Image (cartoon, rainbow, N blue to C red; front, side, top):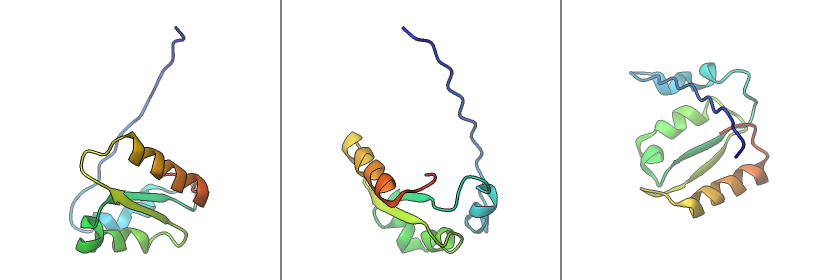
Length: 88
């Protein structure tokens, strides 16, 4: 078996106005993100709008149900590839 190393640091930003600072935290990752969210909740609350106004070229995949399976992941990946997104 081949050995490998996987490193994924996590930063969580929360609080009043945090959604308006997403772009500042993602500088250098590219210009076109794929924004992934659940079915309607982020859009209905207005949170998605706060994020999208920061990215002129963002693509949205908002068909994620609770407890998504690999089929949903593959659908999201296909959207990402088709839209030629830089990051998720």
